[in-house]
Structure formats: C-alpha cells, structure tokens
Image 1 (tube, rainbow, N blue to C red):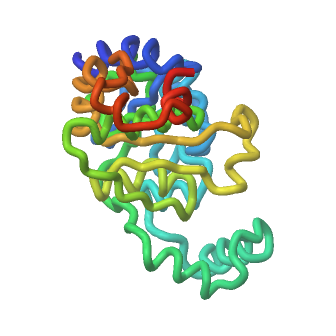
Image 2: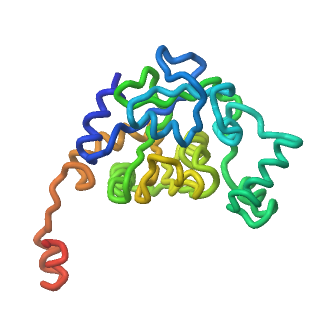
Image 3: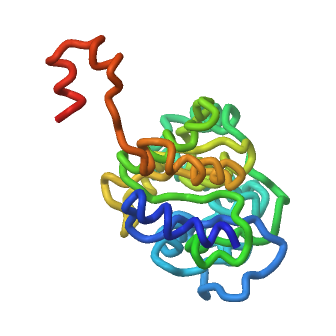
Length: 245
C-alpha cells in the first residue's frame, strides 16, 4: 500500500512529531478502531499518536462535527437555535447570527451523504486509501508542505481559512480537492494536546503523490540549496550574505 510506504519518508524529511493522519470516507468498517465516542478535533491528535478512530453519526461526540463531516444533517429546530446561541453568546466567535450565516453561506458545503464512516488513522497503519492526508505541524513544516505541493505545477493553493476546524481540515479539501492550511478555530486550539505553534495542513491524496515526487527535486524536501553564478553576480555582497548565513 503506497500510502503506508510514504509515511516514514515524509515523517523523516519534515521531522514530524507523530504521524501524518490518513482520513478516509468509507462505507466499510475498519477492522480495528478505538471504542467510544470522539470529537473530530481530538481524533486528529489521537490518530497522529497511533490510534484508529472511526467516526460515524453515532460515534461522533460533537453535533457540529457530525454535520461538518457530512455524517448527519444540520441541526434543526431547538438544536439549530442552541448551536447559534452557543457560537454567538458562548464561544463568542461571531458577533451575530447574521455574521455566522454569512460565513457558512460563503464557504464550501459539507459532503453530506458521502459515506457512513470517516476513518482517521496514522498514515502507516491506514487500512483504506486516504482521501486526505492531514499534518499537525509547525509553520516551517507547513511552509515546506505547501512548497512541495506547488513544485511540479506552480499552482497556488486556494485557501478557506474560516469556519470550524473540521470544516477547514476535512470537509473543504474533500469537497474541493484543494490543499488546506488551517489555523483552527479558536475554541479547538484550547483542546489538550495542541501547542500554540500547531497548525493543520490537509492535502488531498491525489495531490500528495506530487508532494512525495518533489522531495528529491525541491529544497523544501531533500534538494540542496545552491546559489547560481549568474545570481551571485546580480546581487550585492550584503544581500548575498543573507543567503549564505
């Protein structure tokens, strides 16, 4: 399984803490998964640290996460009212329900009805081919991943850095096929296990092959940085020192 072979290589090159996380929308149960209910944001950390998490409509512990992953309909009636009140008056992430509506209207929709299971696994243990490979990483590692993603094509990512963490990190790349860089929503960042410097990079698996092919050719991977002679002649000695130090 190619994705399992990718795991140790990308971990070594980037110096990751833990594993990249394989995220797969599946109609099948994984053969092994941790028991109990899980919040999506916690599941990222658990999978990075070695567990297999199977999120379904019944095992997702967060109603918002269930909806954003496409595992269930958006809450209605009292549930919808409670969610809006919590986001505006509890979490205080929006000043009004109009601002909340505007954000949701202008972002990609959830992948409703896509599958019954969203399986999160360490990449090296993933039983199913990933739809997305997610990294919990620092800014330098994120910079390298984004650079490696664009090395072959030169096409910049189209980011959607708003909404819930599960929307940004899972739903958006699944629905659009775009790489996602997420600072996470402010409430999620408080979950035990996340560091102030952590952010999330989610790469659709069909793009991840290009990242792996780019490792040897790009300096964001393993390639050696070189100052060409023509460039050396074109800049001042002071500017040159910035590259050589």
